[in-house]
Length: 68
Image 1: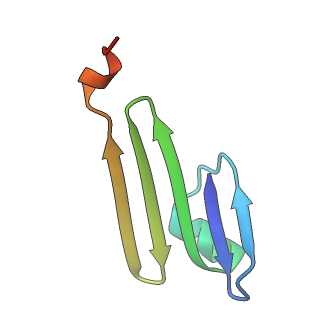
Image 2 (image 1 turned 90 degrees about the horizontal axis):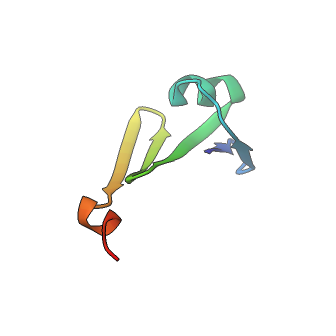
Image 3 (image 1 turned 90 degrees about the vertical axis):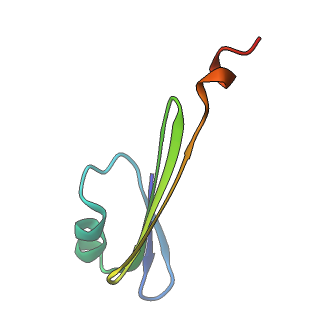
């Protein structure tokens, strides 16, 4: 899921976009963009505002997957 914040503060959600985050933000005229992606063992949030970027990533240890 990609979340775009417009120059006026409006929030726009884009599902399943394969565009690079900076390109999508420019194309849509957003001042900030965030992409949340999840896989089986991780969650990643990438944020961009102008030239600033931030990436947060969390991994689930494999021992949680085999716990009973």
